[in-house]
Image (cartoon, rainbow, N blue to C red):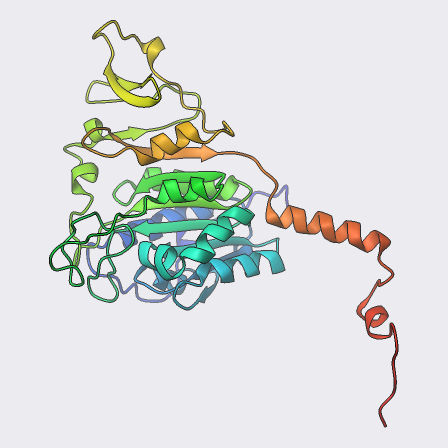
Length: 339
């Protein structure tokens, strides 16, 4: 089976359920991207499992023609980790939002990353609680006016990339809901990485936080405000591809090629595989208007996964253990028969 090419189309991963997201919701595009990605991975359809918690995005398993489980609030990371550890052959996809994943589920989220469980986590970030009708979330911007912050939030938001890298994350990518082609590429890259893969999707909630990312995602500004990273290529952006990133001391700086003596050779080349996280952290934290927002695979570093470590440890213990089966354990020590 491993050498056999499997012929799937995105339609093979669509369920017969009515998709009940609001018209214009960014979730529709992400659903499309994941179905496209799964059809390209050459993985048997019965080996996919989609796990979610609670929130608008967490309806996802119903719309996928795969195995799935709609969990409880904040527990998607715990459930997905358990599924992968119990059956390492599965390709496990965890669907979560900025509320489900980073608020009530934040503790599970960071430890899943720290352990490097081989799960693909798709984090929908619309900076609001949509399902419960518009409360501020852990990623809502400082000062955001919402139903639970009528005078503006007084909390500093999480930056998902910073959180992932701080939890020793080995894979972090960012994409946006209005670019299905790029989103599909990021889903494929996440699936091909061994370990916890986090893909942040800048997603629009048309009802409770419409246009929250518009300054970045609007196609009128895209060339000037979006930087698409590719490993081994210069970090270039701009309407005329004439802007790029350079290091100014310990900070990133936007420079224009051809001005102040800056040449293409001065522009930083992206190294997603560098085990040192410092530049990846700076890239993930870049924000408009000082910088363009970085999209693509920001960090992709190989490391031992929890699954690999558990298998290795189990095999080593079994070599020297006097217990070779459950019966060996049950009949060890003092035993007696009850009549």
